[in-house]
Structure formats: C-alpha cells, structure tokens
Image (cartoon, rainbow, N blue to C red; front, top):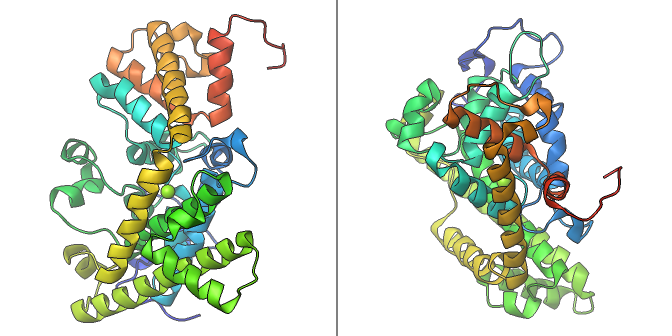
Length: 380
Ligand code: MG
C-alpha cells in the first residue's frame, strides 16, 4: 500500500467526531464511518429510491443504492491513484444521497415547494440531518456521530443562510474555502457515475436512442471506436462497451488534470488544500464534452414526456401527503408524530423528515392508504 500524500486527510489531522469516542481497535476512523453508513436504515432504503426511473419501471435500472456504490467505486479509484484517503472518499460517496426524497429530483422539488414557508428542503442538508440526527442506532448519541471530514464531504453546497446556521461545517461556504480533495473527488465521481448510467438506463428504457446520442461528442467518439473495432457487436453490448470507455476516459482525464493541478499548487498540508482553489477538476476539453452530454440528457431524458408524467405524479403524492400530515399530525404513525404544542416550523420539519425518508413504493402505498376510496387489501 502506498503512503498518503502529505495533504491527504488522515486520522492525525482530522477534526474528529462531535462526541469523542474510544478509537476502534480493528479498523481506522474513516472505515468506521463507512461501516456506520452501510449499517444505517437510510442506506438500506436507497435500494427503493430512484433518480430518473421509478422502482417499478424495471429491475435493471439504477437505484440510489447502486448509484452510490458506483460513485464509491469511481471515487476510490481516483483517491487511491492520487494517494488520498480512499476510506474517506468511499464513506462520503456512500452517504452522499442518504437524504434524498422518494422520486428523485421531482420529489425533492415538490418537498422543497411544500417547505418553502418553513425554511425549504435541500437533499444535501437532509443527508447531513440523517447522519447527524435522524438515525437512531447508538446508545450514546443521535445519528452516526461521523468524523468532521465525512460530514463536510456530504455537504456539497448550501445557502449562505444555512451555512451561517451550521457552525464550523458551514464556515467554508462563507469564507470561500475548499473541502478536502477526497470530498472534491466524491463530488465529481457522482457526476461521472450519473451521466454514464443515465445514458445506459436511458437507452435501456427506450426513451433515448443511440442515433440521438451519436450527436453527443463524448458518446460519438467512443461509440465509433467500438463500432470500428467490433463491427458485429450486438447493440446492447456495444452500448456497455461505449459507456465503459466513457467512464474510463473521464476518470483518466480527471486524474491527469488533477495531478497537474496539485503539482502546480504544491500543497504541503491539508490546510493548504482548504485555502487554495479547487484542485480536482476535468481538463477544459473534457468539461466541455461532459457539459454537452449533460445538456443532452436534460433535454431528451429528464424532460421526456414520460419522465415528466412520473414527475407530476410524484409531486402530487408528496404535496398531498405533506398537506394532510400538516393539517392533522395524528395521521402520522405514532413514532413520527410531532409532540403536541410544537411550533409550526418544527412540525413541518418533522413531516418533511418522515416524507424524505420514504422509499418510492412506500410513498405510493402511504398515499393510497390515506386517499384511496376503493377497498385496499388488508396486507397492503
Ligand atoms: Mg448522487
């Protein structure tokens, strides 16, 4: 195993946990963070939460769980190559989507709209709430009591108002400082993962076609190479081979560009990383290709009428549930009922926590249990 770069996050330069704990005896502190994340309820729920395609649309589509595993895989490869803390990059990646609502972005937008009068809803902040407060597994503390650097990586962005509220975790947003390189890697690994799997899932769903994608330079160059080298390859396999090459090209570009950024800045310590501009990013050419792919996905996949229809349903389910639970907290399952006399703003937050924790199918069922007039089976 190669040694960490001097500016990597290590236990020695970590700001540690909010509540001090005895050091683990068989693993490192960041391994412990990763293990706590994997054992959390929120992590298991990721299996039934989706970004683009709702869970019942097909078994082969990515879920937030498989997405998070793909992000972790990419982040680990990059972190190891750059001699950074692979365990930390993995922990951040696995936790980054824990606060996501059901129904992906449509769900997040709907819940944010409901929460507008009460401080809004932001999935990033919610991921932090999950690991800081909402998980109830340990005797000594609420949440998972993760290390500062893991929590910092989960909070990719936040508004100035929220940053001011968040104390030391929000400081960097107010003073324009960077998080660790490990956090910067997890952030871009997320982008690499979803752009590529959305191409794959988009094609599988039939909502976008290879002919359309041939107009996107990043796809076209790799697809042409594959077709040239393997003219008889069946289409599905050519797609996989293309996506594989795209991921490899993005990861390689990110590593090379970041290596040269680090060489130019010469950070000596983690503190140097925090006070310098970001050092993990793509080359300008690759950024442009990545942007073109993103634009394509926005226009042709995320705004496809069938995706939009599911989005409308998601909005309706979430705003209906939010409305009834706010109107009468006694409709919530007892363990989620806010205490009597709680201020409206806090009541709204408790309802948002409950809804955000739902999986796609749980939200659909809960909606039916409350609103369906026809008889539903007792086991439902
Ligand atoms: Mg993500």
